[in-house]
Amino acid sequence: MNAVTAFAPLTAADRCDRCGARAYIRVVLPGGGELLFCAHHGRAHETALRAVDADIQDQRDALATTTPDSAPDDER
Image 1 (cartoon, helix red, strand yellow):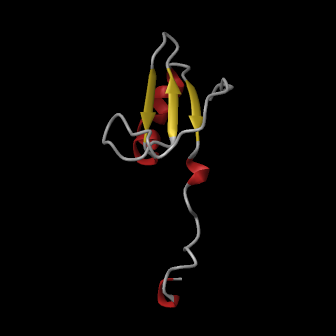
Image 2 (cartoon, rainbow, N blue to C red; image 1 turned 45 degrees about the vertical axis):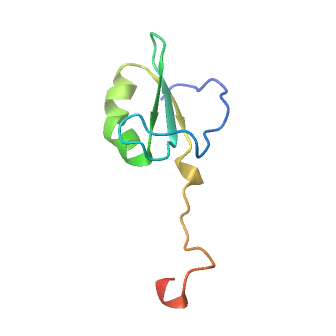
Image 3 (cartoon, rainbow, N blue to C red; image 1 turned 135 degrees about the horizontal axis):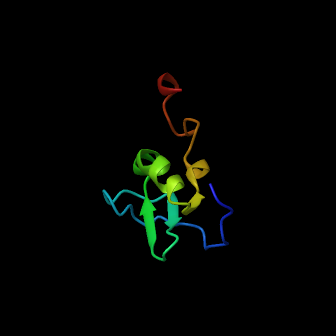
């Protein structure tokens, strides 16, 4: 993965170019152009994107890794 140029953070309005889900990964291709991917499609294409030396901005850390406090106790 290359060093990433500073970009504005992705928001809920940014959608995956493959499926339309919320985007968590921005890819800037070496020849220009930008792709946005959800976490699933970002993982699916990561190897190919690295192979072409694309700049990848990964914001998957924004995904919740814990159960929200509003969840019932039996879902924790």
